[in-house]
Length: 248
Image (cartoon, rainbow, N blue to C red; front, side, top):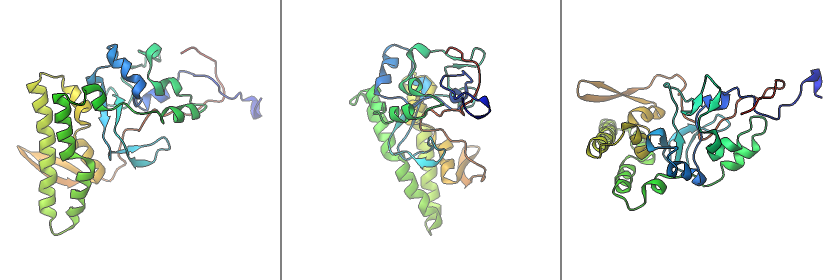
């Protein structure tokens, strides 16, 4: 027994906290979820290399590799498959690797799971498919490394040119998404998987925001409040020292 008769937690309380902090990142073993039809491209999104995220320790860091994650719902990070009413996961028997490893009372299994190779877009698209070529072209032009280089010039004599370049990239990103939806009759939600989160959104991590008046885009400083950023993987909730054991 612990002080004050508190029993250390060793089981899931089904509080839902971890599911409400965001869906899991997907690993190679999770590809079967797409093969079985349990996951579709419209239900996941890509965090691209160099994109700013929050890690397990809530630090703001740039990703060193591409990651695919299950989307949130209700305009929040709550995992798409979490059911509030019953406090359960709709795909629990086939849950992803990170979900199976997560124990809020012991972070070690999750940290080990996160070392496994991540699933990539080209793993699902096929490296030589036409869509893979479109994804490569978009990444080559709109990589976060390239954007960071342009942003640095906003403090130089070429600031106006740099701002126009950034707006050109935002417009190109908008165009590619619209083109794929219309040309291939694709679910609009799948573009978050193919091209990552829209540059109109992620440009905020550079201290900027895109505004629009009519057909004209322009850059403005972003308000200084804390950014609500995705996490690099599953995030455990706080453990409880007492409670009644429940099934999952």
